[in-house]
Amino acid sequence: MPDNAPAAPRQAAHPGDPSAQTCIQVARQAAILAVTAADDAMTAMCRSRSGTAARLEAAMHAAHKEAVEAEKWADRAEQFTDDPTMPSGAPSYCARAAVDHAVRAQSAAGVDTTAEDLRAELDRKLTPAEHAERETERRREEAEQEAAERAATGMDADNRDRAVRNRYLAEGHVGQLGWTAGHVRVLEAAESGRLYWRDGKARQAARRGVWSGGRRVSRDRTEALFAARFIVAVRQDDGTRVLTPSPMGRVALELARLHPAGLHNSDQAAYQARFARVRRRHKRRDDQKAAARVLPPLDSIAQNLYRKPLTLTEQRARAERDAADRWEDEGGHCPGVHTPRLAEDSVVSPPVRIILPLHIAVQPALW
Image (tube, rainbow, N blue to C red; front, side, top):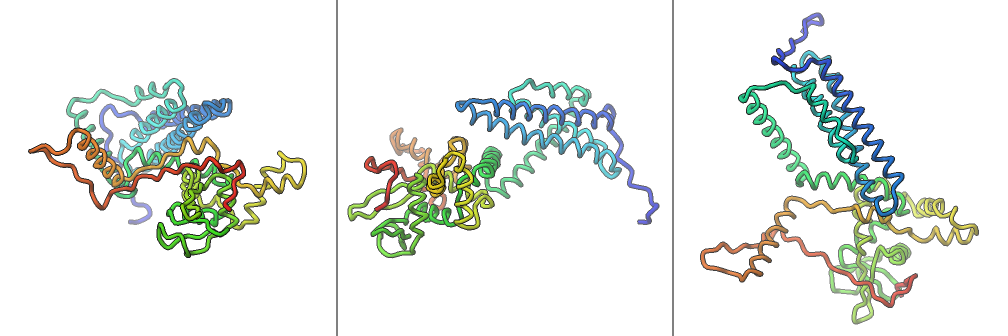
């Protein structure tokens, strides 16, 4: 096409559609309201007490996420207005999306949803046929988008949101653990159910139940994780201690996997980071060094807020397992009634419950 060729004409606007300038103004106002709600949520979190800190932090993250989206849609409303190749309804679509995110931001922050009032400036009276056509198109687009996201992630919308919140938690808390990748490897060995302690050494057995031989595992990191309660020990009849992650250890491991950038490159760098955190709490240099050698526990806020997302396969397996349990509870087989069966390839093993022995002292030792 020659340089002086005219641009493709914009599609004709539907009668009653709001003007592009109105769409831009509404979108910008919605973005302002969303950002204000996110700021209010952050202020409430900063002033909160320990009992409400977890709930307010989650509200703050949710409001911030919606505010970012509202600003993005406001920017797109301006960009699409200046683009002659875009459909005439693009600015209106962007403005409505900005208003939707602003309403969600205000709702998450717990303030009045004043952004709802902006919808009146965008709405026009549609015929019943137009209403039906637009609703059908909206549902089709939502179904296509949901199908694409499910195919890409293997999770539904609720669990995708849960995964996003977990990444926020990981970014804020993994760096405070003072870990290296070696600590993660020890916890992964414990997660496998094959990590054991015997004769003052930590090893990962070739298979479960065979507590002899196997790969050597760092003794120092294993002892540090055990002392900090990331790992618990269960004594066997022969005196071997089988090491498994504690509930706090499982959450910490999942967060470390989500944000490996928060891990330190070396044990010395991890020690220096822990030393910087404890130096103000201890006056004597020896006390500072001793405190820095101890791994800090995972923040209780992260422990309370973390929820493991479930894939669609795991949800189906759980539903089939629950159906089988109900079937058993209600009396078992009845003639003419379908017998629920578990899918063999999708059964998820139940979590192992670990009980910490009462005889372990405040500063436990593995030997």
